[in-house]
Length: 533
Image (tube, rainbow, N blue to C red; front, top):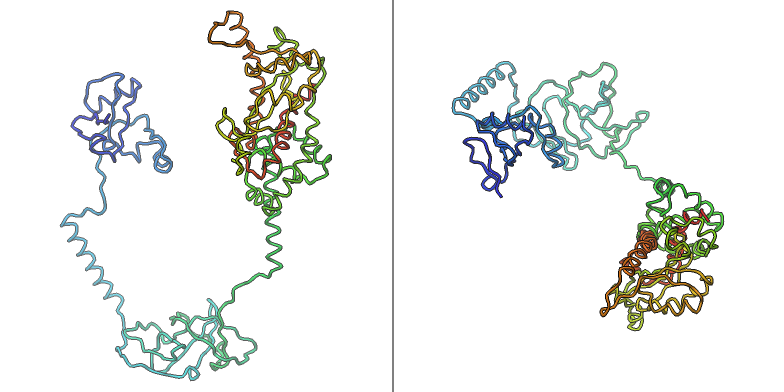
């Protein structure tokens, strides 16, 4: 809908004048009444009305004019501002014939006064070329307050631009003469008045306002003057190497400072648990920068090129550090993934479980990570997931009710069913007898496997199209779904590591390391819950 200016007699609207600003009439009663009184209209409450910019001097009436022009924020008017009649902005380019004539007369009068006060003596113009040998010029060095000058004197002729490349001097025409001394400002190098060959003399004639000092000028021939341009400083290879090393050290220090001040973002570890990095460094006996590289790669999924720039290393060097340090870290962090005793689990059992399912020791679920499509057709078929409609690696994760990860399987192809993962992952050998495990409705086919192990399985009732669920079954389904949210939250925390995102599309070269990456992420996620056991 087009915005129409509500000022009486103003026909501006946003359709015909899209370049204009239309300000909203205030909704506050007091200010709104003032605006209506200013434009001479009857007060209308509540309706959205607009007033165009022609009725304001926005540079003076707006509180944030500069901020509005620079940042494009919403324009805010001052409290005491009301619309006025058309505000015309005078421009300096508008002249009337009278003002233009007056300006021309003033300029002519000023030029006439300038000619009378400052007459300009001239030299009769000539066009004769004078060819002289540069060696015949008598040059003198004159000391002046502004530095060393070289003066070239000619008793009869006024000589201007001196060009040594063509060795031709041309007389100046209509030259203003204010003094008889002309000097050329150049860079002069004199050592004990030794004689050197005059190599180049390309400079601009300079009118010196100073008179030569008596007794301070020494007559020199042109062969005793050496004029050389300033040389450009070229650092040596050693100094360049040292400078590069210093800059790289500064870059690494800055990167470490950023990581340590925001470890949750770069490493996935809060500041309160940052001491874990030092413990890990002592166990692995590797530089702390290597641990930072591995954790930052898993957390942010940055390219190796960018990591190399951050840590002043080559791309291949960072890749080698990642591939060598990651398995060591996974071996140590795998110790944090264990099945605690039942008494310890119940001691820190969440309140939601204490009422109905206080015997639950674990909650299980599966998650998938997208990988690049393999080139081989057989591998494509193994990794294809109908659920995600892409090539994935599938993992089974189990955690206690309070969030401690007590089992993580190795990776399986995306087409592998949950029953096969339960059989082949070794989860049944880890679960103690008479334990209670909570699952989703999709694990219906594994009930027989858990019964052989004497493990109680808690899952929502099955749904069929031929039978309606009873009230008790609906209530149980809602209760189990509300408690299973704990494993969903844990998977979400694992997904915060960008390399384990649902659509991370892991490079085929990193797929062999994906199991280690999952173990490291699960170990870091299980740290807080492990403190209470």
